[in-house]
Length: 146
Image (cartoon, rainbow, N blue to C red; front, side, top):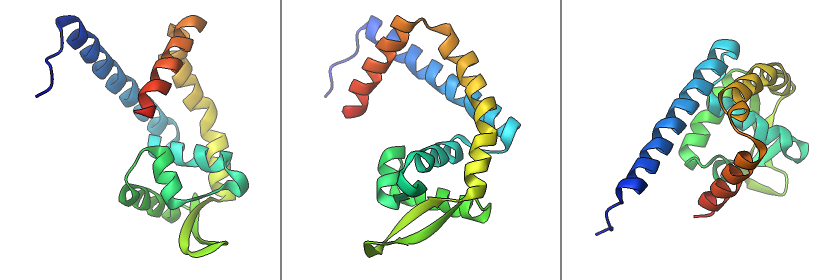
């Protein structure tokens, strides 16, 4: 059985949990209200926009997004219906599928970015100084490796 958390550890864990859920909810709500996009839509488009030829194998995309392969398939299929992405066979391996950001998807991302980044700034970035941001970056880079 796991060792119980100390009062301080429990307090910090709950603060993290509550604040991260509240932040994610605000980002999701603001993005959806301003653009009609979900955070998953946005995250997929950012990953694809940054990828060579705006394409990523489905399994790799699932790994980058920290989602199950079935969740990514559902997400991509939803975005295909809206013309934001398409699926294509991998050019070097016909068995695999790649998600590809369409021109419409790239434009949607460009249109959505200013409002989303304003919410990120107002809800998170502007509340921390450079040193605190650096600590957050180091801490969550360490946690992501676990």
